[in-house]
Image (cartoon, rainbow, N blue to C red; front, side):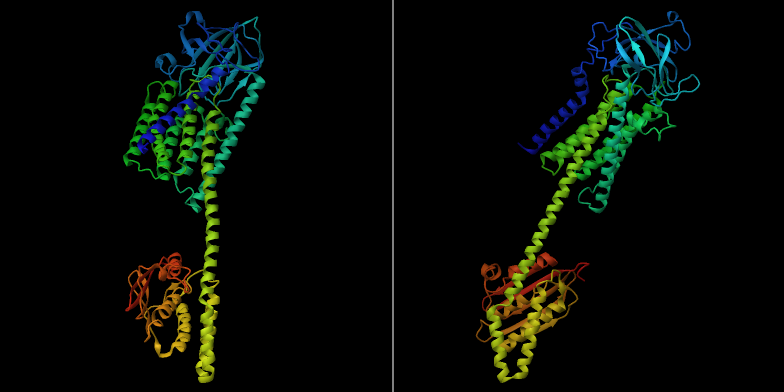
Length: 630
């Protein structure tokens, strides 16, 4: 299966999973028998006679209510028989006409329902998360209120003050809801009757849950921001902190978030926040697009983000300038649905990354499915399309979103830790290898030959013998010092070691060996004992195998981008394609492959070997100029 086909199949699967998660509240509503113990009202009458009610669980006053536009029928002491009424259905249907679900902007309206055969003790009646001010009356008596309610001044704040009621199946109750709003119109959330203890407990749990998740996201945001600055290879995108910030804002301003952080919004009308809540959905998705495309190295059409920003501004402008409304479920949900193409485009990028086996693409995809489903569920619920209490879906799915990032974070940390362990092990191996190399330099036959030379000179030429002892001691000390040297050393120090070694060899071979130096540049660094083995090879395997002997010339010079060191000999030469000289690490001398490897690891240097049999060998080392090696 090719990558394109796999990517398309994964995209279909991702969209299907997103739709399934988004529809889970509707499924749970069925499983929890919401519609069984909450019968639909018909023509303004709700009869609970055959309903499977549970006194510990809420009932939702769904169905057909009577609607009275531009009138508070209780507060104004109106004669309902003289008023024009219409039928109003809850929950709100998305594709109903605007006129059916709305009331004139900023004007009052009333909704009436007769309830029969409802049996519930210690009950309260309220409208959960309604973005407006309201009063609820039961048999003409005020029993519940939210916000500051009045003709001259109206302010919504999601507050709830309710009287505990006793509903008896033997009585009939007239429930009237009067609403007063500045920026929205219509009753879109379904009034609910629930046990007072249940409401208190559920509200406390929901506020606590949202606050905990908000804190967790804030902590992760700070942590990821810290690592994006200090450890850029973990989370290098600047969009991640912005993404988490917008998500925290969304959790703060909507439903229980507004309640939990009311000390911040104590003077802010909740209706005024609704446009920001709507806008935050688009911003979250747009920032997600920018973050994922940057993190997963996706080639994003530069005009695409501009097109979506322009479309968002157009929708927002239309949303604000609509006649007679700024906030209705009809337009709000449509604006939210307008972001779905952005979701599909981003899911397409993410699933393509999965198909291409980009690291962590699966976790990023699962996290995004969680956040987009949570936003859509929250939109459906806060606009009255979902009856069953679903306000906790958004924080839970946001938590799942953060968990996906946490998994990526800890896996990257684990990889870095393992890489550090591996690097430490490699460093240990390199140290051991270097030790083996240095020790191998001091081979028994060299010690034997050097000491025999000194013994011979003591009798024949004491002054030369003294010089040989000094050179030999410096040579040994240079080898011992190199055992603990993990960083490059100045080239001058390497040359000193080479000269001590060559002095001993000159005493051994006399006129058969000639050493020449042409040092034009020495202001750079090389690994310890990286040039000396090359000189040793030139003497031992080049000059001394030639009957008449020869010359070894050591040179250094500077080019535009490199420091160069050359070791030339006119010895017997060898065939460069034969690996024994260059690559066999079990050879008696130190193989040039070891030297080449160390030069490459420590200085990023290149070693070039040119040799012809009977003519000699030319070795060039090219060390790049860097800020650390100048």
